[in-house]
Amino acid sequence: MVKRRMPVSFWQDEHGVTLTEGLITLPLVLLAISAFVEFGYAMSQWNQTVKALQFGARLAAVSDPLTIDFADVFPTDAADPLNNGDATPNDSTISSTCWPGSTDPAVSGNCSAELNRIVMGSDGACGVAGDPNPGICDLNWRIQPANLVVTYQRSGLGYWGRPNGPVLTMRLEVRGVTFDLPLLGHLLGLDQIGVPAHPVTLTTEDLETCSSC
Image 1 (tube, rainbow, N blue to C red):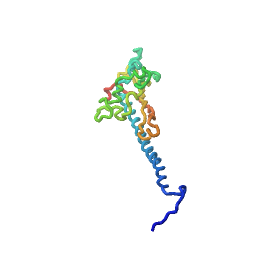
Image 2 (cartoon, rainbow, N blue to C red; image 1 turned 90 degrees about the horizontal axis):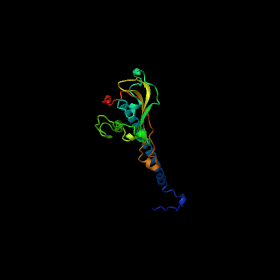
Image 3 (cartoon, one colour; image 1 turned 30 degrees about the horizontal axis):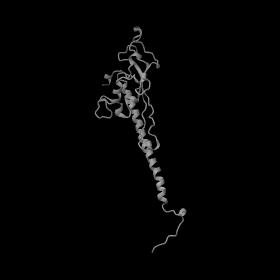
Image 4 (cartoon, helix red, strand yellow; image 1 turned 90 degrees about the vertical axis):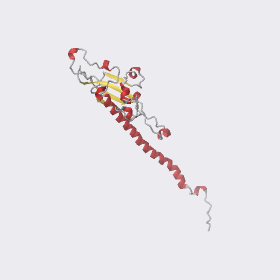
């Protein structure tokens, strides 16, 4: 027996309400899930950056100086030969900086070729398996030489005439690296958020590449 349906006005008709609510809610749920997933992905990139900088700083501490004017800024011997063997001065204003991405030619042109080895590794390529001496970009491919700022400063440690070079404070930090957010980056324009500098500071050891072999 066919049951007749009484006519109902448009505003009183509740057929399809569930489907309508689902269509409204589904994009919000998907957006929330995507936010959680990409937040975790962003934290992974953050952690990769920190670990890569820590690795690079440890490598640079036992490598040849990364700045060209290093020998002029931090001479091995004292001005007076009689002072050799005395403690070196503790003056952090004496520094040497290099950053290939700088707009200052004096800073961008002060980087030695050794910086590329620290970043690219001994094979000169990022992310290639089997490199016996990997570099920073083998841990995080987003970090290239142009993204690194290296600063050497007087630490007051060591002495004039030290055979293995001065004992300095070295700071390594990243610039111009952004988070990669495949979905939210395009939807909400969040693809240009910069990763913080994450400066890693440590005391140099023997500034000779052979000491890291």
